[in-house]
Length: 359
Image 1 (cartoon, one colour):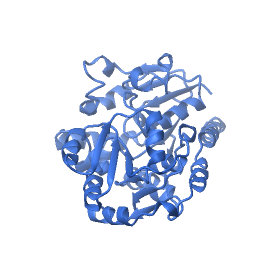
Image 2 (tube, rainbow, N blue to C red):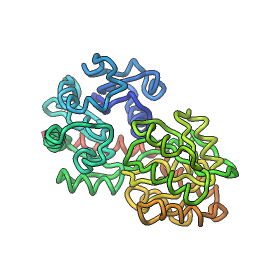
Image 3 (cartoon, rainbow, N blue to C red):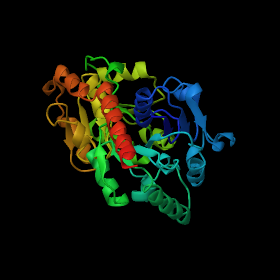
Image 4 (cartoon, rainbow, N blue to C red):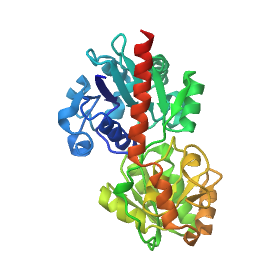
């Protein structure tokens, strides 16, 4: 196989980028095509010599205001020249599935979610785009969804969305968790902890209000478009926004926390598994991907209504003594990267072999 890899953009650091780093590990000789790249942010995940960026990277301040470029991404990804490759492996939340592959090539797309502007317009983050522009993106998105040979969904939750919005079946391969980034902590801190991009659909605002109602301390690590509004919401409450926090400090913070909190409905949600790798449980909204990664009563607990009052009640009733660090760590190790890499390579090889056999 002559493989090329494609990812939406590599100018931010989050769960999707960590997953893509494992995809890149599965194919260490393959070049990486992406809209934007910031080596200062993701250079340790994907080295610069592997990266081929789109023409959008020449736009001033593109890496900072990348969400405003949404109308330009379809053309940028369709413009990539992938001739010479017989196997394309993409990783996407929106754009990379739309690349044009050479005749006879196969395209396996690892999909983190159906594009949010497709199924959650009112929650689509960071855009002030007019509805007609979004409608054009939705039309392109659904055309682009017909292009991959196979979708590989990161969860049963996302597989159901693919079936609903794209009318396609998919295989499910749960995201890998970098368990070696974490060490089992003491859990002796007097706080709950959130590590997240600060985006409206993450519902960090709900957690801030819930912590105030319950009278518990909450630390929030992360940056994003909602940072200013969340900092204002947290002012004078029991919550503290920490801003950017590096991996080593995240390890310490989650390991010492009473529990992690996942207040919004996630596509998959690495947080409960990363917390488990640090020996800590998670309190999560009962919905989305968390239902696939939390074993209730063993690795975490749920709150049932997307309201501050519901989460506050769960925080007030939470008893960390019910959870065993060793069992939490063992649960996280079921999602270790080596298993992900092995299965991904097997899926891609099977699709490629079937394509050759059909010729």
